[in-house]
Amino acid sequence: MSSASIAVNSPSSSNHFIKDGVTSVNVNRLCSFSFESGLFGSKIPTKKLSLSVNGTRPTRPERISYSGLEPVKASSRSFDVVIVGAGVIGLTIARQFLTGSDLSVAVVDKAVPCSGATGAGQGYIWMVHKNPASETWELTKRSHQLWKMLAETIRDQGMDPLQVLGWKKTGSLLVGRTPEDSVMLRKRVSQLSEAGVRAEYLSTDELHSKEPAIYVGTDGGAAFAPDDCQLDAYQAVSYIEKVNRSFAPEGRYAEFYHEPVTGLVRSTSSGEFEAVQTSNNTLYGKAIVVAAGCWSRSLMHDLFKGSHIQLDALVMPRKGHLLVFENFNPLQLNHGSMEVGYVDYQNATFPLGLDDQSQTLSVSMTATIDMMGNLVLGSSRQFAGFSTEVDDSIVLHIWKRAGEFFPKLKEPSLTDFIKNRKVRVGLRPYMPDGKPVIGNVPGLSNLFLATGHEGGGLSMALGTAEMVVDMVLGNTTHVDSSPFAAEGRCC
Image 1 (spheres, rainbow, N blue to C red):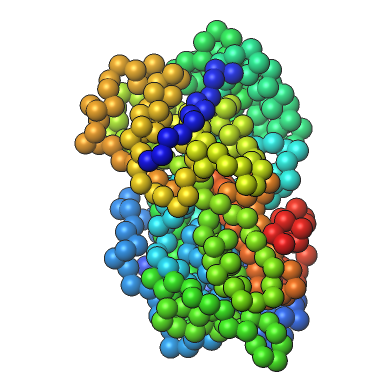
Image 2 (image 1 turned 90 degrees about the vertical axis):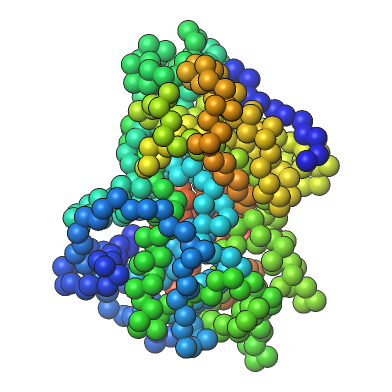
């Protein structure tokens, strides 16, 4: 790997449920949908849909390995909506269409679910590190609301959200170690409280009482958001897949995995794109949604090659490492934790064309306990192209950085846990202005983008899905979509 300049931070909805794979419908309404659109004509229902099922509490599930699952096939190659990308964004968009309308959906991907950024994430659904003044605040807040509603509805159906989604209400800590950090954290607590998020400032002593394992010195402190939650990406995607697949018997859902997209087919009469060409199939769709994560830019460039359409999605891969320690007894955590420096590097923007951008590396402490009781430590951020190779030097930096906040990690050597250590490497879809792209491609009313969420894909997934479906159906969006438009940002 090429040399890097290391910047280690200084101490400064709709709900649908499956029981045994079978969909049950009940007149007792959980959520209702009503919409009108001219794009699909009579396909859009004019009356509200009613969906509800009963379920039983399952036993503790094993992690899903998607490489062993056969995609749901369909005899038809014509759908109302074709979605490119089977990460959490693409799959939740599919779920929203399926549970919120009677439209048919196909999902196509060059690999399988959770093979990209989704499967490499830490799974936190936190507000503590978010800025209420940012343009992504309302979308994030709405999405978190939808995740919590989904977890509550799963619980109301007699199931355990921990087993279904890996859902845990852990609360989160944004910690700092300097007087300057403490000033910033007090301000953040005030901002969060004014924006309607329950938060409090913790002094060093108060922090120690809530999280004894963490150390921030005498000048430090923390912002604490007790209602923040986390989930397990594999469990959540497995659940979403089950929901989507329940619509396959009625011909409304199909998956085309291991099928790279090779082109778009344009109508000679309307000029709109009418189909997605894959390595094996031509999939016709009245609407096409590209949710291909960090590959969206290169994919769109290849698809539009030779046409008059000028579009540059600007999405870049931002590589990240996470360490996972199984059965790690030396350190037990009550809450998820993150250092204040993570916020700066998460939101860092770089001018396009900056030569040393690909060499910039940052390492910030994040720490969570997942649903299996494993310790998950992060995280790194690096522009290194599309490489997903593990860099042992970065792994060591993450370990050492975590040890600065958790003294118990300084006692053992990282090599002592080599057998129980796993490394997740993913490519976050990064946008230079820090906002995802959600909306139609300018000049093409039926081609939509949903990408560029960087490290917030899981966090913003349900809100993004709701927004995309409302756009396609011609509904008013719950959250102002204008900050995420491609117009002026990708053209």
